[in-house]
Image (cartoon, rainbow, N blue to C red; front, side):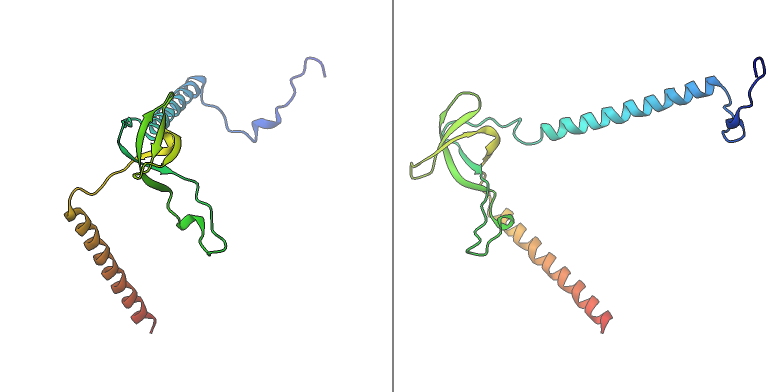
Length: 157
């Protein structure tokens, strides 16, 4: 009992460790990959954070859209996911403190005070070619999708 070495049960089950140096190298490699992965995720978070409104600063008499919380009209049968997220255009009439802006519609009626996070720049298509190009893309997509549907229907019949 005393002075006798006890048999280790785990020697038969666990694999033998080749050396402490190899273990330290594995730990160092794992730490490097973990650090690189954390840096990539931090950079991705930074890109997402700076994505939209960081560059734009609203100015007086500029047209903007306001983000709204759409309420579903149950009596009309309209669900909120099919409603517009932004309303407008509204005109910035006054710059308030801490990224707040006073908005009025085009007729001059006061809409209210809004934060920069709730605003988006109102942009109008400069050229009719952009609109025509979008229309052509939609018609070609409709044609190609229709052709795919026809092929699937032929295979089934």
